[in-house]
Amino acid sequence: MYFAFMAKYLVAALAAIIFLASCRSLKDPVFNGIENVSVGEIGLDNSLLTLNLKYFNPNSSGGKLKNASGNAWMDDTYLGHFTVDSTVHIPAKDSFLIPVKLAVDMKKLLKNSFTALFKKEVMIRIEGEAKAGKGGFYRKFPVKYEGKQDIAELFQ
Image (cartoon, rainbow, N blue to C red; front, side, top):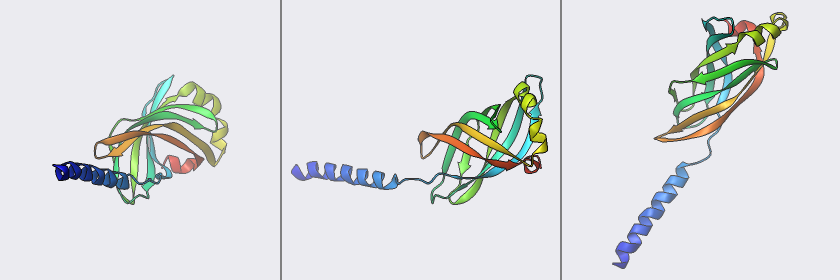
């Protein structure tokens, strides 16, 4: 009886050790740029842009991105709200694309975009939240990026 009791605790302890060992800290994906910007729907108040965010996963394990949402700015001008509403497979130690839908506030964009036409680069800022994980365990992560983007490369 004593051995059966101890065996249960030993199995539970081993399972906990294996679980904790597999929960090593993960490195953040590396942002590699914006690709394939296209206009989906055009409106006077709002327009819908679709684009791909290119990332590299430096981790030795992959996972899935369930969804993401947040806000985007260009040169401190609010562009609009973005969403990722499809599941994205994240491969281990490889690049991957995240398809993004960006609802652009046209009034603010047109009001402040004149200066951007004469620049080679613009500052892009993204803030939001993503839900990602693996094997049925998902958690929310903050999404933050700020960096310069070549305007010509955005619309290739």
